[in-house]
Image (tube, rainbow, N blue to C red; front, side, top):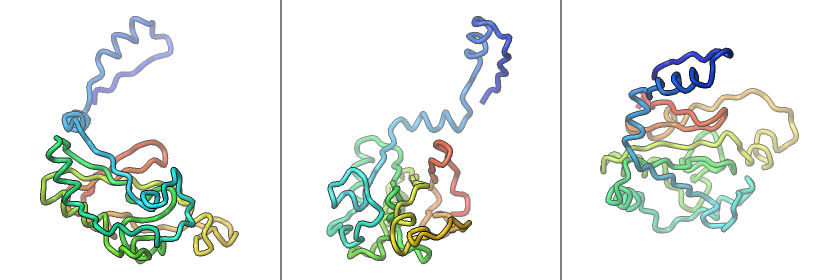
Length: 190
């Protein structure tokens, strides 16, 4: 990306000229050339018909009896999509992968599969790019009795290993977060 410095004394014409000099980085160009990226939001809300999850929804509501991530991927590829971003954990705190660090996951549901792993395998098989959205908000941790803060205790520092180091990342993953805006980090340890 071309860096262009803007000074407080720049005139409107200076600003226009400088703005016309800005060029995207190769990474930004590659992202734009993908043209179509699907954003899939799938989780307990799919089964509760609620706009917003509460964080204390019973994991038993998550029971996709005929989940076929390969079908999702084949449909996206045939429609011309180049990648898919899965909401792997939304603000309700429910994780679409089993985790030894958290109880509010697919492992506590009747499904007991791994949506993240299944989608990653299907994407690899069909050549579709894969990214994840992980919400920094977590109502389960805040409101549930088993959550870090559900018992009224003060906030303490804690660290949970990233998705790419504890789950299934098959070399094409991108992790997305909205802690300070939308940023991406390549999944290099996969």
